[in-house]
Image (cartoon, rainbow, N blue to C red; front, top):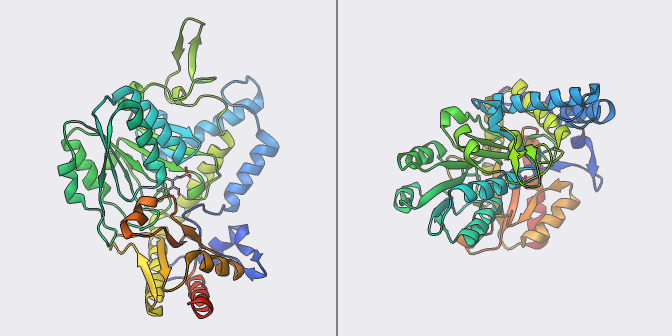
Length: 409
Ligand code: PLP
């Protein structure tokens, strides 16, 4: 049991992958920012649907198709409930955060962006929340503007009001940075944006698993996330959008299920949410995602956040005590991400030795090159914490760092 009363042994037993050895050492998995492991609750439901209930949704008139369709639409309602969306048709299933942002960049761009218009993002975005907007700007002759962060990794929110002009059409911001761990003040950003009648998209890829999100309370216009980062399957993601926008946006992809009537002269489109779900969707992925969200709800997101903060703070303190670690991202509002460098040691060499010791961390830019351009470097090591990580694993990581430093530093 931890200080926050979290039954960690029981939780770890839910994740079979954690029990294995890597290079003959117990696996210490600290690459959760990239993807999280799956609990049995998710593995079992995905297996069951593949082995007993697999059938294409929305199309069949037979038993299996009916069962799969019901489960898929229940999964949509689970997501609706999880983020407290007003309507279930405000939930669109996609392939992941990247798929979600590309969909919005296309559809929002087609509907609202004209030459000279401006879109605001931040300096700490993942490439998925930079490149689709850049591509849109190239297509439309519009402009990307950037809210900078300071050397502690805190967003310079005071600059936002200066950046907004009459040409600003959208602000798209990450809730939690995947490199700096900074929890951005999204409520404040949304309030400022709305005072200028500018809608906001929140990238919740790194927050959906760590923080309570209530889209109605936030009054956010769009929110996106991936299933695989929240203990669900890969290849499934979500766009939440306010009905008033989704109704106005044109479809992103054409094909089956997104249509009402098709002739060679003209096609009319299906109602929400199907207008945005062309083709055979990843329905088993959606059902698995729903099981993952239920798993989190059973434990309680507040408990999870408190426990992860305890482990993060412990990790920060232990690394600082080593005396030769630089941690990137020192915002007091921080979650679950520890990006760091070891003085005198190249990250790639450290990562290789960590691997031999059974420790999975990530090295590189973490798909956020502008963050490292800010610090004049190419990247860092990253240990990212999930609900099943322990302080003992932090101790083991620090032991591995000491070994690396002795060998290479
Ligand atoms: N946004 C953030 C903040 C992320 O951390 C990531 C993945 O690391 C993404 C977007 C892209 O997510 P995906 O690869 O699941 O589409």
